Image 1 (cartoon, helix red, strand yellow):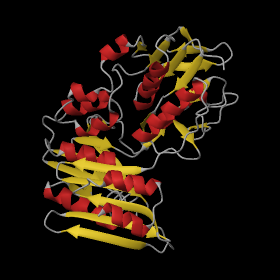
Image 2 (tube, rainbow, N blue to C red; image 1 turned 45 degrees about the vertical axis):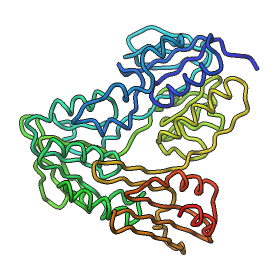
Image 3 (cartoon, rainbow, N blue to C red; image 1 turned 180 degrees about the horizontal axis):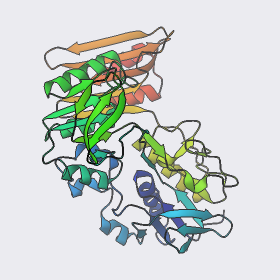
Image 4 (cartoon, one colour; image 1 turned 180 degrees about the vertical axis):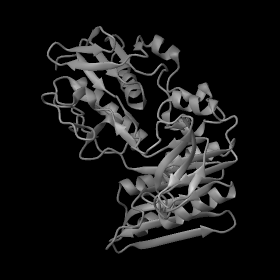
Length: 398
């Protein structure tokens, strides 16, 4: 195995930073560079929607402090966008002119917020949340804002709404379905989320769809629903999913690009010496866009770069919501598949408001939800991965 002369990583989120960590575990001397379009060192992106009002505690925010990069001899180039790759000469084309050489390239380019073509989405006061600068802009607009609307009732949208409610009088979430986080949660979990929202005065418009974002003098004034109702708003946050950053490999010989960059189970893209990991990458037909996936992909790519024969196993999709007045953990099947005969075990503690709900099919654990007390989540995750039988699992989990 020919060892690389230099490793270059594009992107410094969870995947890119973890790749750098893994490289330095194996070799402290090989030249290593991280290039990022953002101006900040790698940080914990899931914290963005939870720190809109309070701001960021930098001691907890960064994945690694600046000192760590210096101590580990890592070149970090921030505020720099890579516009193209020349795989023949192994050069990166930098925005604004200039080139950089690479020997082995790891793409950890992540994803941007997906903003649907809603009329009025370009108005002043309309935001999405994907990078740190987004939360800074929203924070600066809090003063004087009495009404805010969040379009999209997924986990990130709800986290943003929960945080906004600390500073804004009226916050409404527009949810297209008839339940909260309905794709991931069972009815019990959705009902618990609704109750928690009611307790803090967070409004949720169910079975609602956005027709347009309205404004005056270039500034947002409200959101019009397809029902004809108009919700007042001096601030609108759009949280309707992500769009993977795949442009660097589009139309390149050897690469396969769909919504994500398609990689094999070694994280290879099909372009020689180019790997892809994290939110921008898809392996085995799935891209969950979750933190554990980013870490596992990074570890797999680096292991193979250094000559191992490591194969990626897709991460287990989980959902965890930890807000001011509720803690919820869900994994696997939510018991809503049509035509499936579920065996359901449920346990509720009325005193604490905690509940456990587990789903079995053919005597095997296929999913579960913990609400309130989520201390059993590690046992639930382990049992789910091992596809444990009902009797064995219930004996262990009690």
